[in-house]
Length: 210
Image (cartoon, rainbow, N blue to C red; front, side):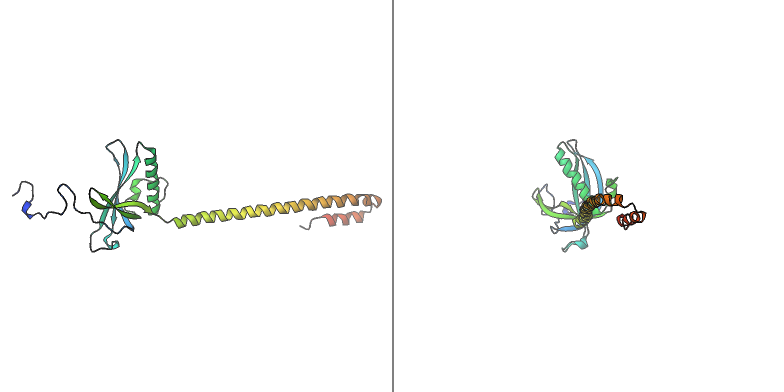
């Protein structure tokens, strides 16, 4: 019995160079549905912090001969000495929640576990091997654009109504001015003939129909 806990002569060696890792199974570089298996905050060696995520792509959604699911790890910086790196990380977390369709208020990493999202995969070489890398999270932008358009349209209508009201008010002012002029011309006539019935008729003519 070997002192390593396994028989070395029974082990099938990989094609990877000594000290390296076996060839990663890369999947098609496109959008894939994935389930979030874990989401935890972890510290870095340099005093920073990040969100460590593990995604699982179902084998049925992968166009190859393998039958196993594919796990992909992803790191998002949440604490860094460079504020731009932190801002990029925050933006990425928000987009991940949007891809999952989760509410953004009072969010926590635990909300992500077990949720499905859409990830965009590209291949990246790392230490001589091709790996799956999550480049960004996919979410439906069309719905957000439609909501924005719906919000803009009512505002445009309101502005149009306001303009119409202004024009009507201007017309009313012009009518009032004309009525004042007519009234001034009629005053001498009323003094010449102080007839009660005529005054009632004038009042009826000047009274608004509404």
